[in-house]
Image (tube, rainbow, N blue to C red; front, side, top):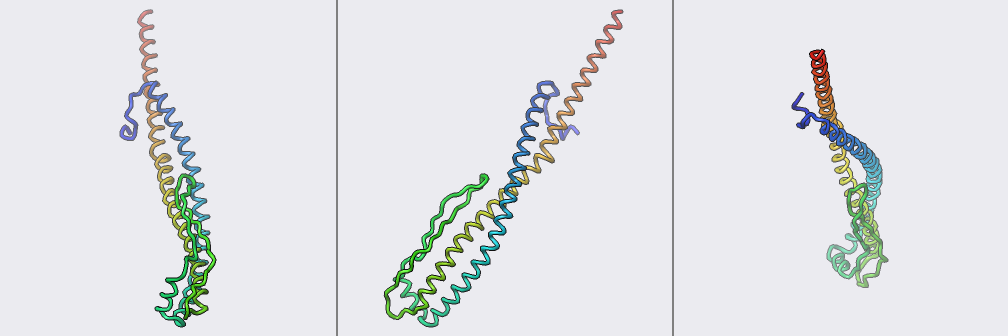
Length: 206
């Protein structure tokens, strides 16, 4: 029993200090529990968003690679490489920090840019279609990367919050409560002994 108690002298000042600390820990537990619930809700929201976005991205990638295969048949690898050297970027990506419930993850903003003609002979019409499809898929991939990173970090923070909640609920707070009960019992026993001693002295003085 004594091994599970906090090592502190059983005095009234110790009791008051432990009671204040226990109240602080209980309040901290409640805050952590609310944070854990909010994180869990965010995780489930992100999971739904991730699944839908992943399906959309896979569809877009399938269409882009199908278009690329047609362009490859018509232009060949060398023709595609030469045309790609003269092509300007079709996508602008900005990465900014973002925070939610103390969890930081990158917010990715991607924007399609107007396609400009490459101005080379020997290009096929499918080349521009391939560029457009790949740019569209890249926009979705950037968004998917943001959601996946956010989901991973939110889940990690949710696990940490769960561990802290469990530690407070099943270990730290009960240990404080056991120590408080032990000190109360010790003080009550001391008070009874003191009263008994006073009673004996009074009887002897009669």
